[in-house]
Length: 373
Image (tube, rainbow, N blue to C red):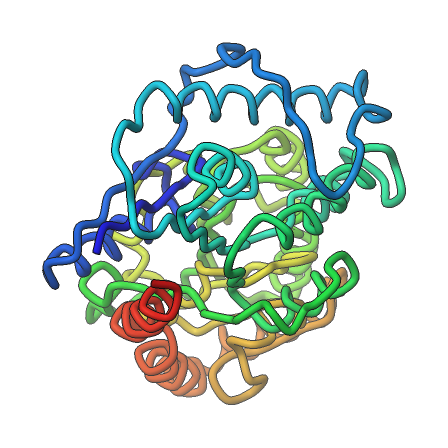
């Protein structure tokens, strides 16, 4: 069996699917399944020029919009790169991005195409205040889901919450199967340590959708109560300067460390105590499972895939979106009670090993691949 995993971002991209799929490839290759990876290099820009058409809607009324034009050009570039680089056939192509899926079906119309939808571009843009619901950009991006439904032979997604979100934009949501992301326990594992002051960590792109402004307000509340802590923020993004200024304004400058971009944060994540991320939306939230495998206590918002991973009070704490007081109360609970924190972390680790192991994903994918042959 020959399988192509078609990514958008290169495999060395940190976090999420781009960092997970190479480990899937490694496991399948060990089983004598020929699996290759393909992606669009960042340097490929404005190379493609082929005419783009969609089968389920007319995209021409959207032409002239900056975001739509960029999306179409990226489609052309991926198509150009695919035709130039791939000169062999496969039994199955598994795409992990809408553009990759549409291109692969166009180039290989007779090859079985499986698509995993990992996140929602339009929802991310909306939460980051880049577009508005109902705008030209939002209309175009949500129409892509119906196109994908007509294009792919099989559609997978990463959480029941995201499957429910997609129901508004596809004709038959029952076709979509949920396979949660899986993680290699060799990469994410606990390390015995003891911190005199509670160490909080958050790993994400610094964008409004991640709710880090809410986290800083919560930290200000905790500090006002006299609870010592250090918050480690790993990641970079367009609002970093705003967050740094906010930290100064809230008197948190000495309590927060901004690391910026880091290629392998999992290498020292196990040395912290609490993982916290008050996202405004998450299709799955892979970093929670990663932190759980490192045996950190989890604190997150009651949204999307986060709520599917955390059972409040059992393997972590959930708080409402945008509620800095509730977030501060949750963080205070795990800061002042190390035994409870440890209990949550152990339970979270056990669940992650059981539900999000890479072996489980391999078994589920193997079954899907065989069904499509």
